[in-house]
Amino acid sequence: TILGILCCLSALSFAFVTYRSVFGVETLSLLTPVSLFIVIGISINDLFVFVDMYREVQHRAGMMPDRRIWETLKTSAIATLFTSLTSASAFAANTVSEVAALANFGLFTSLIIVFNYMCVLLIIPAGLGTYNTHVEQFETTMMVPVNALVLKPVKNFFQTIWIKCIIRFSKKTA
Image (cartoon, rainbow, N blue to C red):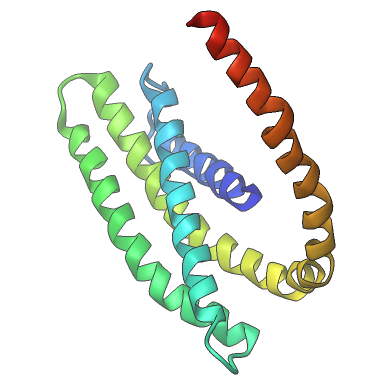
């Protein structure tokens, strides 16, 4: 989650600087906040692709961590490239619109998507490497008892208290 947010914020920063300095557009359109939701969705999708591929590669026996990250990057980069390119080109098509707000929105959104792809390629593999070296060993040794301690009261709550409340509420409304 933190990596996805970092990718979005980095892409937003790079896109805004490029939008203002390279393309010389001084104003943002009213549609610009919509592009934030679009890039969040694309970034989270890319993150899911990378993490899923990392977990798939992780199950292959005898692979060193740096090799796993390379295999993940090699496969996931191609998949996310095509989704990012098609999305960016679809929004870039709006730049030919005669409506200035729509043209600026298309330009800004396509820039965010391109920079988001670049940030995903740089940030996600670094995050997976950090996860592999620092977090994963901690999870395998500590999370089993923690999960048992946390999940048992939650399970008891839903099986006893919550279900009774639902049954009472449904009887009152019926």
